Length: 359
Image 1: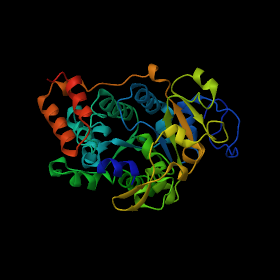
Image 2: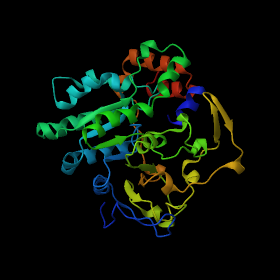
Image 3: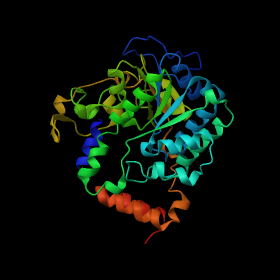
């Protein structure tokens, strides 16, 4: 289980081969390539490839994800898409919707509105657009090639969540549950899957535990799958690489770069993630801060395989809460109640009120 979740609950194209065997820590420059060919190339050597899009409010990243799925080569290569933004309680309903059965889009919205995330990161038009996109692609495909979307969030029932302790039982499963889901529904059936999650779940080693992976709290989706013998081609998103390679400032946003053997890959991963504290895990809820002089260094290429360059902040846009949700008093009441129930910062409730023009 990802350590950050524990802590929160307590408080290729262009001639570049994915299979490159370049030595670690090299100094050749990183090269930007087109995202779609690079990810499809990765599936030639990996059954599981990640995409950093677990929070759907980033417009550019979600548009790129939809373009990937619409590419005719995708359904010829990939069987399943496993997503962070949907509760597995609604898998049967989502299967019917994705297959094109008589299920309305409003009916499946419960899958993401009732996910474990209590905040608003999924309450935007991009989430519905993703599922709609897959449904539309499937309408053009024969039965044997139709894509399946697996909802990777644990099957928590918000009606049974009364306290932070109730919530914690589920939030600590937000890496182990999808890892087991992939093993059961994808790998056991010799299928290939794109897993779509936020950056923090897509690390080979957990930076907050000082890269000590000996405890269950340190595990990520990637570490659990790789411990079981399945290598994951891991992609992280980042908005500024020019600190490590000056010409990256001129790259086209939404490019992908393979980091192994490059100047970017040799950089200290802490400079990318920017955590301000690390811990030694001594028990279930016993996390001891580590002095800075005890922090271990890992290269970027030790933690991820590639970086999706999303461009500087000034070029990126964020989707607001969907207007039809803001128009629904029941939605506003639900979201504010859940934010308060698990103790999210007041800023999250203020965001709901601001975006939905609630006094």
